[in-house]
Image 1 (cartoon, rainbow, N blue to C red):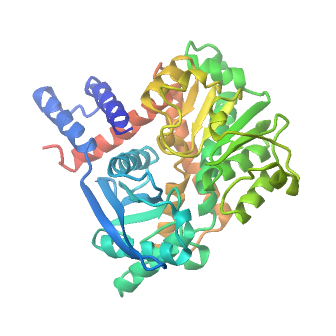
Image 2 (cartoon, helix red, strand yellow):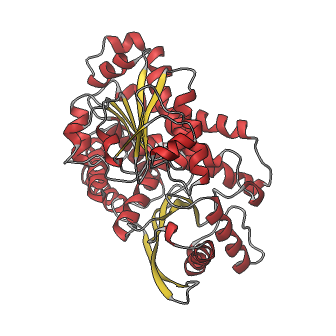
Length: 459
């Protein structure tokens, strides 16, 4: 995925190089030199921090756990990015995710740079006490590079408000007298977290889809109808008609996205399939999403895997393999699990005509190119799943000001921010042949390049 991201950034720089209205001050050899510098700066992280956490397990064994904190770029503000708890975490992936955070923050005009963290564990294999020790050690090992004005971590896959509470408490302990409320975001409400933060990413994912397919398309129907743009035709084909929806991943992001879809007043959605790491559940008449959310809350985040469990909660569904959801005959597919889900080996089997990326980098370049060429609308990760970092910014502000917003205020600010970004991106997307991902990257790279030039970092 790292090569995919860098390739698209290089394409964006190439497009801007030939656009003389962009940074017109740069001419001739000076322009070429500056753009060579931009490519070098954006394609590499500022720092990579790596450590092996020493943790004493309850059984007496001492383990060393690989962990990372990558600082990609801070031209726009302090570094910002989540900490992923997953057994597949490795340095290359964390570098790429930090890269995506830089682009995401630039796209949405959030005053943060991009960073990312990771701990290479399966959190389900550790006790609560052991996880608390892992979190404490992570803060101790990386304390010198963390802080509310340096680098502000947040939850990611496998972590949540509990882990952020533990980490903030340790940061406060080893940095007495320093401001600590803004050192981590995604905390619990009693520890200075923001109302609406847990649901923010999932709500933002669904809002990006709803706004594109309902608000924007209806408001611009006449213009889209006269366009030869392949994506405009797809959007009009799906406007004002019932849609079948599948959601891959049923954690914090996927479950909220599924609930938003099932309760939407603007689009007639029917959520017919959801999946997690174990199973896909399918019902052509629609699934009972609230009942499934109640179930995972009592079962370590896992969906029902047997007929008996489904019967106990009165949910009617067929049990299928977890991979089946990717190739189901549905209108809309939300990807809210992990990266590399749609790839060269399954791209021809994907039937959804609208794909929304709630996860980071779930579609490879090969799959993106293939599906986009067929007119499939792909709402990319840096556009769709920014709800978390937008509300993290609001939480960071609240911590600095020690005054707090209501949940309604938080969600209104989230939707306003995403609407502003979408209004800036969609006219160009429906007016040229570039996929939406490329349009988003061009916008991000434009802002980053301008700031880096103004800061004198290109020479």
